[in-house]
Length: 139
Image (cartoon, rainbow, N blue to C red; front, side):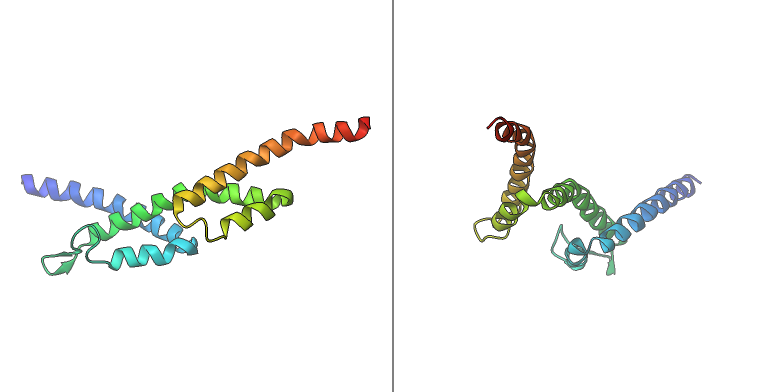
């Protein structure tokens, strides 16, 4: 009788985990740049230990891998917004893309630092614009 209750609660939580994993998987498929990495991570048997459990594929381990990739997408989202804003502001876009696509920046952390720096410089440019306009008007 005790195990039946445990199995009922286990199934209840597994349903919610399945729903969240489905939501996470849909988001991963829609973000094309993460979809391939997520698929390779799920299929990788040596990543975070073995994916096999008693000769069968472990669904829970695959679900946790999908959820982990989903949280990486959430982590990348603010940087995507910043890149979009930098690109829309054309006076900063050329310098940003020139640095971002160069071979000098190879790691993900360096690229994130580049995005943050150019996004900060964008606000410096915005603050400098009225002063430049005033100096032109005064002359």
